[in-house]
View 1 (cartoon, rainbow, N blue to C red):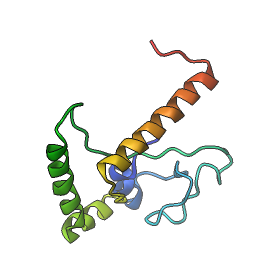
View 2: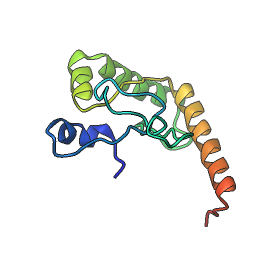
View 3: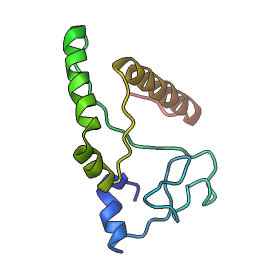
Length: 122
């Protein structure tokens, strides 16, 4: 099964699951002995999960800024950071513009994968 560390890390630590590999391009600090998929023999594999906050298109910029400020502030809180680390989540805060750019890169990557695989989107 492939899943995010935030839902499986405690099960791995308890010995109820055995991690075979991590799907990103680098090993992770909370599972340092677990190889990447590439290190395990499957090259070109780099898949990570992420979470983000979105708003409907056309949301006024001041509202977007207020939401961003609230989340950015929460992510600076030591107790929030500690809890997210406990869950195996790495914090990578970004501005709304940076997140929009990252989403566009994800779209480009997905389009290329669909084209190369011969799949079609219906």
